[in-house]
Length: 242
Image (cartoon, rainbow, N blue to C red; front, side, top):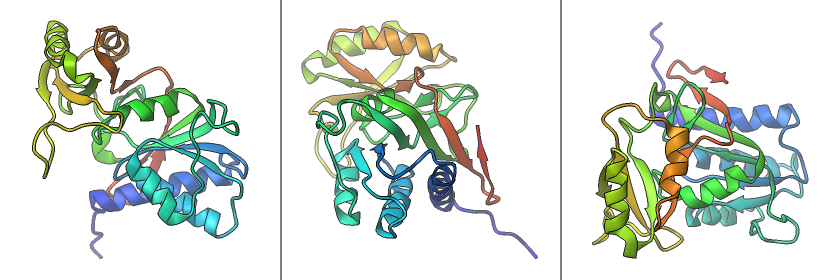
């Protein structure tokens, strides 16, 4: 009997569902927790599974902090209570954040921000006691930033100067344009995105700091400081963890 390989979308759903179920089973997601919820086509499956468990009464008093309008709307639709990270009951820290990634290297360093939500995603991830990433098998790479462009969120007024400094760091930069919208993409925080590629492998941890030191940069999509627990789904229907 021929086994049909899972599509990328099926892998995303498998990774999100398996990760949440596994975390609940181990007690890493529990009732009463403060949970950051990421953005994108993979993270949304984790959000949906969390909502199903809340609706079934298996989790109660979960307080969610969302990283984008997209995730906030999904939580409204699925009945997950949403709070600001600044709310008194959250107090600036999260027990766990679950999110997707655009690239994951062998040391679980990431590129995120394909959905232009990198600023709020990093605020959640870097203020969480535990960070969990879910992904399909296409997201695992040897080197970051040479195939999928690193997003750099910048203030519009500094677009030219930031692009020049990024070029000095070896990047080829492109202003991200909107789809079905004239002009550049504007983030949830009102900034622009410069997408950056390198021809050769780079030191992502060093570049994360160097890029953020550029005047006019708000944040960049290298995530190297809070290494996540990663759940990856393969096309054969298995899920691995590292």
